[in-house]
Image 1 (cartoon, rainbow, N blue to C red):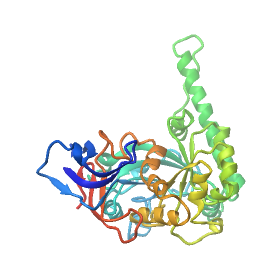
Image 2: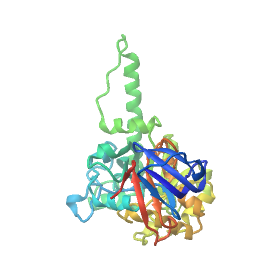
Image 3: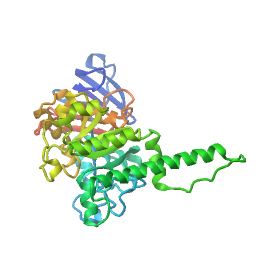
Image 4: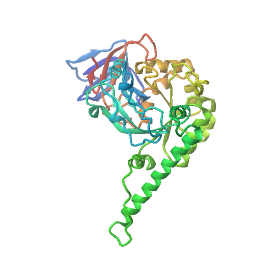
Length: 391
């Protein structure tokens, strides 16, 4: 397909092309440039005169497909509340790619999501990055699996396990569960390494028994995977940072609701990335009591790279661009708000080699809109996912 005469927000070094074109081939972006550079036409051409062309939007934290739309317990597959430490659980085995919310997101220009377990468990399991449109077989829509290991602090683990009259029922027990499991995984790695180094020698050590939990944490502890850490209250945020530093983890703070109130301290502590949201929601629990639409702007001002999320189903995924608009109202620059739903989440999720900007070689995930991305009245007039029109 050839899209012409669009104002292109490339989110790359090319910046904004006031009147340009994009050609797609075999699901990838083949050409990007100003109209004056266009050398050939195409029978499958879309004239985007007077319209804006954006990269497909990316929601960096959601539970879409994990808690299925219009269903109760039978469609609720996001929290395994039987064990507070479940790193071996995989979102790819739970997310339902035919949940209609994926389509609603795609139709609104949200083409990639990170989705996975909820925050009932201190260690919840693996997140995935996937496309919102395409094959009904989830394996064909995966961008990255695993994309992150989910951790949670604060009220959610306390509430879920207090209802069961089991630990953890306090914040210190939540931290204790996480520390214990990470320590076991580190020891497991050491034992496996020792076995491999002595195998076949007179000093051969015993091969460690297979441990699914520890195996799942090996990529995290070897820094091949990042921790995405649910935290709202300032003290929970700093507990997350403390444990991440203690075990030398790469990490991203998710929600980070009071982060803007302690942004300079966070930056000083070495925090570099945060996923903010949901921003269009009520203060439904005590740890949200200081929620503010200014949070994203405060974190950005302190030098922390931010992405904006819906936390679907808390906020329906199609309102991701509107969430960015609310952050603009709270003081975030328009360009930074657009980055926060395109290139920033792509970088945070380490999938920016495929998505997040309009560049040659990247996936043809594109959204042509009849207005500004953040305007509630703006409508997508053409959305492509892997070069296929969303219909």
